[in-house]
Length: 269
Image 1 (cartoon, one colour):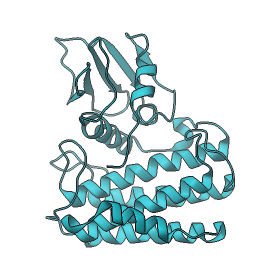
Image 2 (tube, helix red, strand yellow; image 1 turned 90 degrees about the vertical axis):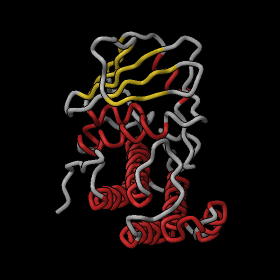
Image 3 (cartoon, helix red, strand yellow; image 1 turned 120 degrees about the vertical axis):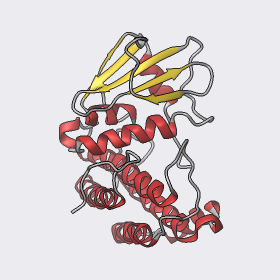
Image 4 (cartoon, rainbow, N blue to C red; image 1 turned 120 degrees about the horizontal axis):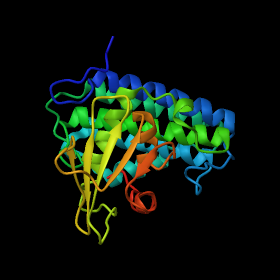
């Protein structure tokens, strides 16, 4: 059975990402069914539950296409084809979603370790591992959205149940992969150093914000105290950093939460 023990590269094994993906996909559908397809999604206010399920189904097929075709993939064409495959009726939407999740998992399993394919984050791991990791967290975060629709509010970490090691891996992907991209909008005229400090895992990150592209390093330098700290369990930090929760302790910088909420909006590519 796969474990959460990181390999030499610090990431989880591909098999563990596949487990996370499968569980998140199942739970997303369960929460969506309980909420009803017409329900609004509090954490994505512009969406109904049907929109959420459709979005995730499209992304699964788009990601699978990159794994199947590698460098030959045309991302725009993959997206168009996935959108076109979406059933018109809501009764078929859940079966279509399941089919896409199975296609993605099979594509990860079949992909060679030396696959050459799109990797759109900063300092990405090899392509097979990149896509397994990215879709595990993509689906996990949208599972939170489905639960929010079911509850009528953003859930707390205990209701989501993300294991600490998985949450820490997701924090690392966000802070070291998404945040340092040139398109990042988390910027401030007054330079700010933020320490992200989980209570329950042996990990930490230092984020340097300014009017330039953000920079993240793993760990903290005790000789250079951060201007601000964000503390909580790994799961609480995971939700907060993805703008899905408030259960963290922020100190040292007024307005940090507003800055993060306004700027930390990501796209798939």
